[in-house]
Length: 299
Image 1 (cartoon, rainbow, N blue to C red):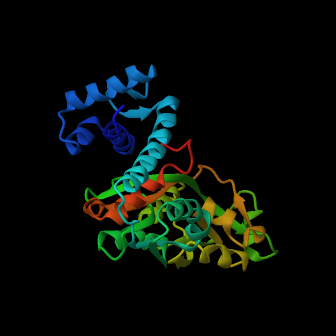
Image 2: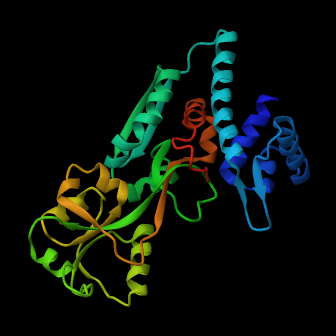
Image 3: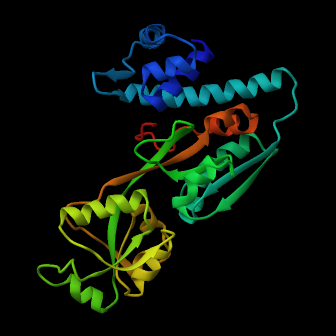
């Protein structure tokens, strides 16, 4: 099996779209489909399930995708050694939130640094909701970002995990706690600490619309990490990704509320500009990522 075929499969696992992926590799949809079918025949396994509405990886497809990441990385390293070229160097700029810096980056960067020790990684920490704009405006090469339902056409994204949004309340005695213990819970008078307007806030606002409630907003936070702090002080009920709660130093001072209906999940991934793959450092980083969680299929 040719290394280029492995690259095709990785890209298909990201787009889940035969026509788009075939076009990127300058193949007609039928020619690209035959290439994937030959791979399935050679492996003796069905790698993708196709129907009229969607394409998804089978468990065997996920396993093969993981193999493709490893095989391509080893091939690129071998090719570099065989031609006697100097090790890849330069700088990679990466933007992420505080939570991402200690929950996701170790797995991302450790792998990359082992393979390319001469590349300097410039890390910028900031508001998670600004991460996508950092890439779109060219301020950084890549970002760990919440992925929108419809990704801008100029970007590539690789999902690395999904986490649900959750309501959290303080564990210490306070008026907010008293309100939550009432039956029924007076949601319309509880003070809320919500994300600033944007994609995640839209999801939260839809929840309130379904409940026919206009929320009493105590604060609109520009960063997820500040919300558990305000909640732990008894300022209100907050909404954050569950991952933020789990990784927060204040996790013991807040608790997750299991209100119905449940809030939706959000997907988090690495984003780059398509044109930035022309840079060897960015291309090397992109190919080094791979899936951090085998159960998560790439976008």
